[in-house]
Length: 114
Image 1 (cartoon, rainbow, N blue to C red):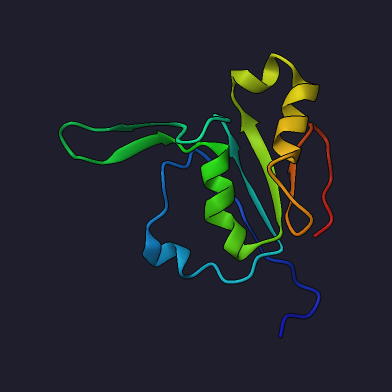
Image 2 (image 1 turned 30 degrees about the horizontal axis):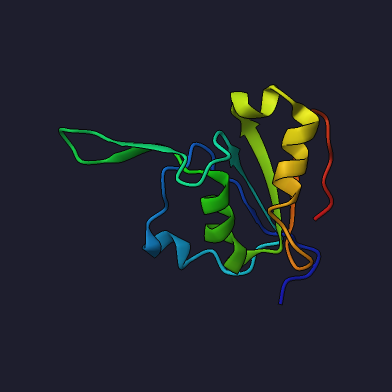
């Protein structure tokens, strides 16, 4: 049992996470991840020589990926879609959550209690 400890995970520039690493996450108090693309699928590319995937997974995909591990997701590292209308962007992110899952956009200087 943890005492006075919080656990969080903060991947950014996520193209994907291998299952062998996802299986190690366990229960997290918070996931702090990127918001480069709001659209499902994001923007992923494949290196033609190595076959390695790179880019940015979409926020809906990240939410789906991390929901089994946490009930609180904070989005950082925003793409231009967010900067066009910050308040509207915050609302779009918040609507991805539900009564069991809090999703919020981070702001400069914001402090989080976990």
